[in-house]
Image 1 (cartoon, one colour):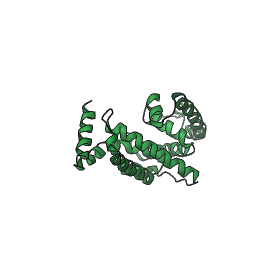
Image 2 (spheres, rainbow, N blue to C red; image 1 turned 180 degrees about the horizontal axis):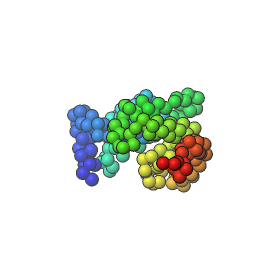
Image 3 (cartoon, rainbow, N blue to C red; image 1 turned 120 degrees about the vertical axis):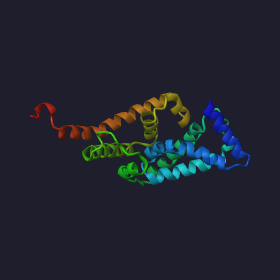
Image 4 (cartoon, rainbow, N blue to C red; image 1 turned 180 degrees about the vertical axis):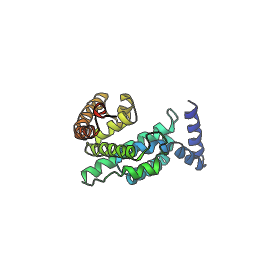
Length: 205
């Protein structure tokens, strides 16, 4: 509740002419929102464009923000629907871009200081992420959206239904079909990765 009140106060200050308050709202949520939009768009450049447009639209519609939710939740819905619309148009236009996960990770993720942070582990992780990204790219925009919102962002079915303005039953059916397609597309990669690993029991010390 405190966050919602703070966000509403900033929004009111912006509407009163102190537009720098909107910059505070943007800074408070842009880093959290970026990974979601990146997964929806598949390209860092497109994700940045969508975020910029979403914040512009948020500014233009700020009088509609009433503090019932946090500003993040409010702008999240705007950004996700904008990303879905852009991605759908891109697919219809036949323009598909590759997803450079390595450069994105270097630019946006904190350094990995875990014991597993060695070159071989990093290569394996990059390969897994690239395989998942490629599989996501093959999904229809509507299926891609529910997968990202549910399996990556952990949104509840009710939230996804509200954000995408579709019935909960449609959310569940799209998610089921999307997961099935992802399993099929990733099966060969998983099997290949497993066969490449040495059998621990057969390795002699």
